[in-house]
Image (cartoon, rainbow, N blue to C red; front, top):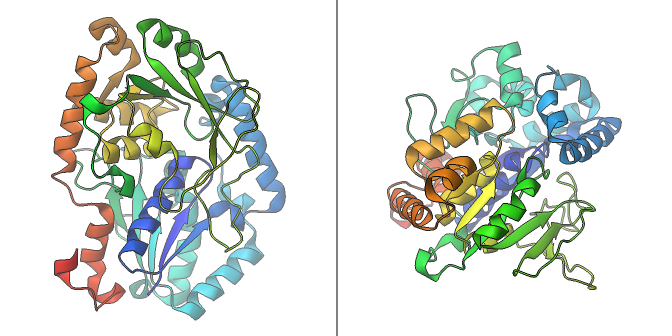
Length: 379
């Protein structure tokens, strides 16, 4: 029985967590299939996605403004491809879905009508603590979703506290804080958005070594204080597949002076995790994918300006849990010091020990349907 994981490339927070869930399920012997929403879009719309990505990286205010413009994603869908996909699902008896992007709901609703509501089981896996734009758009047009789908708010929602997380095989054992490098990872999420570039000089003055993510054709800076630079392969796209027909984690490589970049990709996690687990904190806007990594690797986050209200709420939730704090507070109240970072690391570490990983929790709920031969004692 295949679990179909429905992702989107509109942000890596709707993509890499899906691949992490896939890796966890595959380790437990569950067949999976990852699909990306862009593959059922009209080809000319894909070019618009690329242009938006470039514009949002170049100017954060443009990205923020785009959220205020309501869009109906159904106008971008390729109906012929969707019809073919739904026929394939029915022929293969697809029943189990994990959906990370609201854009897929229109397609899932069609499939429910096609095969009957009782024949499909869908988890809506939310990577934000309130609706991101794609989910907000769906709810505006279709109403509430909890009666038709099983909602999983990964980091809590409203009065509901966090109760599960997405595990990463690299996260065990967690590197103790005392053994971590005196470094920070600085980035702008999957699309390189936000104010991260404006903070680099101040972070250097405080005395941290920096691992900085470059995007597209960003230029490498100096390395006099041990700065390291990395870049995702600018030719890679989430909707592309490898030679085996599989979606892959983003290829990443270190950008060194006068050397070509050697891009690499891992099978079970994204390479950024190798950096995240060794640094003392992540300095980034509060995207859902970053929160997922933070929790799994017990690495606190110093929050930069959020991309919209959903990320602002993410930051507020992480601060409430004691897993992160704003850049302004960190500098003004703690002088950019490490003691508060170690305290947040310990709180992350303790919390992670209390929760089951999402893949474990998912299999427990669907055990008899998914894989009757799995014994509960093996989980």
